[in-house]
Length: 595
Image (cartoon, rainbow, N blue to C red; front, side):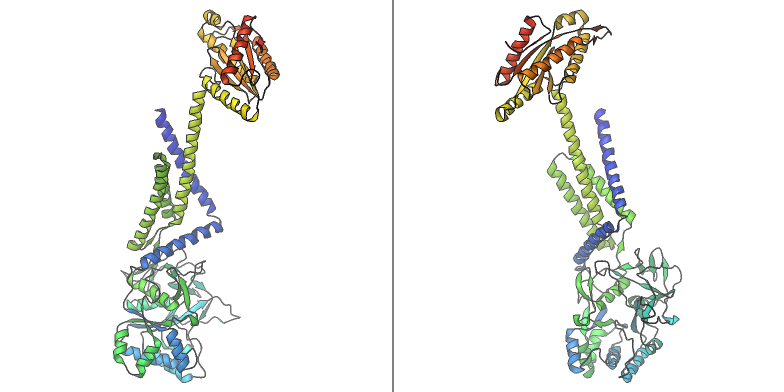
């Protein structure tokens, strides 16, 4: 029963340790340095999972990218002599591609100012956009004050219609200024969306912002706008931290009211058609080329060359073009394929479960190597489970916080377990070397210490003495007063010996009524003084018997010193024994140090 209670107490103690650990981590969580540290490592674990899983994902084959790549840039500089190119070239390219009946042409390019030196080109682009309602243009939002750029009024036709729900203001969605397309383009179409991207603190883009708030109105991300057109949706609802498009499509939002992207692969995941090939095909009126590449396709138009600086760092690659990022967002919407992050409560619950599992295994396993194998196996299995959840259910469960708590729990419980074991060992050893009646050391311990002190004397010259004492007429005393009273006297004599000894001295019960003291760093003369003091203390003490009666007893004492009286434990004990018997033969109640 006592063993069962001890086990229960141990489990309660370890559970308390786990919850204290979590309390400490919650307290640490109030410090931004700790938050940033955990977030940064967790985001890196997300990047690793996405890198592994992206190799097995299939992007939407209907999405293609018309790119201004390095070859196109060289072609344009050679043929036209400058960048940006004339808007007439864009107008001609769009009109030529329209012959293949694409689903949409999404321009990840900003046409902000009119080109006063080429008005006809601007008119050509404006006319093209006006005549093709599947062309989508870009704008972006920022926080420049009116002294730098006067914040424009944006026509209500560009606003996102929200049936119900709202978003809270935060730096990721709320802005005070905007850079819109030139007025003629704004008048020519209603298909204009924002292309803002936001980076995490480490500079990596993991999220997209579906909706932006400007002057208390909502405006769509360019990819969201294109997706709504593709799905034939003209309004959305916001509910339960998600944007609802229709019965089968929704966009989950995290705490920042952004959505976490699911990546399909590195650069060139989507089919890329260089712009120079389209320009060439138009000159040759190569209809087969555009039908092959653009028929019924969703076309993103943007720059992929590094020289034009539209390069982003994303979880699976450090150099991805912005146009591919926007294509990924659209792909996520069409596939309903966003990543959903578990809540802080779920993360805590997972961590507690892992801690309890590892703590239980540590408690149940005696083999040290096995406990480390269990810890490693638990963390590996959990990592594989986290990877599986992201692959199968697009669920991002945290890895780093459970790892930290589990490893810390393992260390704490492991240390506590073996500390308790050490204490148990100490307690067991103490019981093994302590006399149960008098609570002083026993004969076994006396012999061990004699050997240790002899070795110290031989190696370092540390002198020591021993005194052996015997209670006078103790057999007669037991016959007269009984063994219970004899035990009372033995305990009280032992107490007097401890009180009159130094902490470095070793008080032992030698056997029966005989007791010994090893006096460390003590010569014969000092040993005699101590022995006489003890002899007198016993003589002057009134001993209480089992029946409450008080009596006097005396002791006889023998003294021996290492070197003078022997060089082995046997020799020293034998000499002190002779002194003890001489004390008894010459009248008792005295100390003898010479024979």
